[in-house]
Image 1: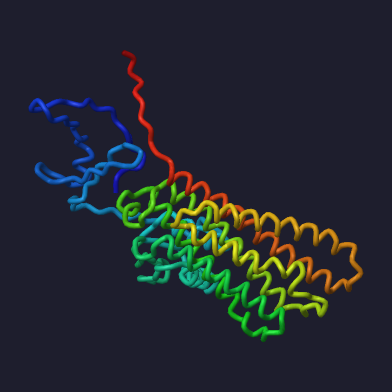
Image 2 (image 1 turned 60 degrees about the horizontal axis):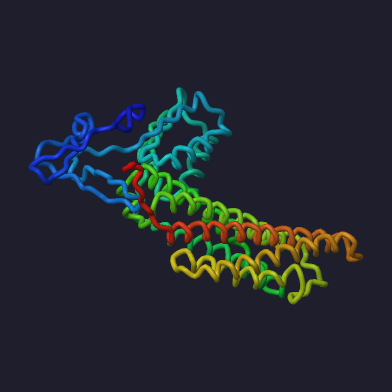
Amino acid sequence: MADRGKQISEVRKIQLTGGSTYIVSLPKKWITEHGLKPRDQVRIEWRPSGTLRIIADTSPITSQREVSIDCNEIPDHMIYDHLVAAYLSGAHRIIIHDSNEFSRHQRKIFREFVKSTRGIEIINDLGQKIEMISLLSPSEMPLFSSINRMYLLISSQIMDFSEVLIGGNVSILDDSFDRENEVDALRLLLERQVGQILESASIEGSLGTSRWEASELCKLVRTLERMGDHSHNLCDLTRSYKVPKSLNMESLPVSVIPIWQASIKLLISNLKKKKISEIHKAKSQLISAKENLMQYEEELRSSKISLESALFLDRMSESLRRICAYSINMAEILMNIQTHRDSREVYSSSMVN
């Protein structure tokens, strides 16, 4: 693997050869590191920014990121965090080792990590050393498909919550924890993919998005994950406490749910299409819903309903308000993406005649 501390840019002169062809020589070290030789081909991409990218497609040399974790230097309660950090770094191979046999608690952490990620498997377990590898190619899970899956999980969870409010069987919420875990796993996968896009031109091309757009999508994914947290909170609230009899599906706070559902559907549909008016409409609806919930919570504090009902309604309103707030953030991110897609490079010369 190439040294990350090496010089990453050089200035080279353009030369004219044969009277009509311009050439730039390639650094010898770059040629050597990629195992290239005379008459081998390289691919040249013309980027939207006007820059050229040279890719060693025919290189016989491949590199994979490897992360080593020494459990002697990490407290047990931090092991999971280090495993997630290795996963997000794009590691193909994660090697965990300890001077002693791994404890039962440590092995439980390893299993939880494998369960909460996508494509990671344990291939070697030698008692004091465990080796994990990633079996999932970044291009096998398109970004937009994963984002849409996150949306569907969150939306279905809130739909089930609404059904329980009107008398549905609370057992339909039994898998809410599993759905939240799936949302979290997709968020980790997407953040890993975005990191790989930022480092690899080939992955950027295979996933069909630019580096700039990928960084914005990463922000969008985090807002979805937070919506998932609050959709789970709503399900947990309904499973743990009795739904107030005074609850009216046509009134606040429940009445914002169909508004949110319609708005988030518009936003998700604009991940690919270009209807900025739909983003404006969704954001305006969400802002109004959020403000109405804030006012409702203020009025609830001076209402005469029972304390138990007031606490239920306040917690429900807060989660719905936060879901609306994160959806507003999502609308702003989509406006950023669409503006960037619609922008164009304008070239001007700094030469003085």
